[in-house]
Image 1: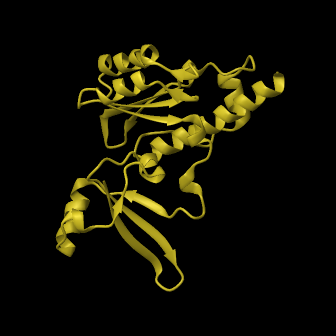
Image 2: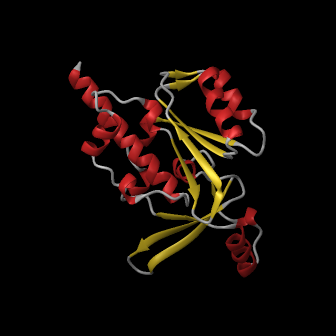
Length: 209
């Protein structure tokens, strides 16, 4: 039993670290200590009794360039997340005027819980990731090139420079794991930088659909 608790703590440490790296890569303010948190520090902070209280893992971050743009990241205790626990976090987002949220769940979400996410008012968005999806940071994989999400101004400049419509760009599905990692919305453009033996660096662009 003790070994399984240790494994669970290590799993959650990896998920917690990846979630901080992910929101940092989306442009939110995250301290380097949280991005690089060592397992022993995580244990002392969140699992002094040997088990992690998922409620304590909840955190709120704000955009580097706009403090009003906040993001709530939470880790429900239920193995299968239903409507009731989800509504608690949705209400918190509404009360604290937090426009975006990420639910990191253990095993599954009920169809009713998914309907709650889909029926949120337009000013609020809520994403969901299974813990297993965040055990490793996919963008750190050697085969995944560097991605940069363009601002609306950068997108407009790109299209003007090459006299293109955005629909003429190659596409990336919004369900693609890398698109989900960066929280891409339909219509956003991502710049992809690949190392090339001949050109040094090869740049391409993709439209999220």
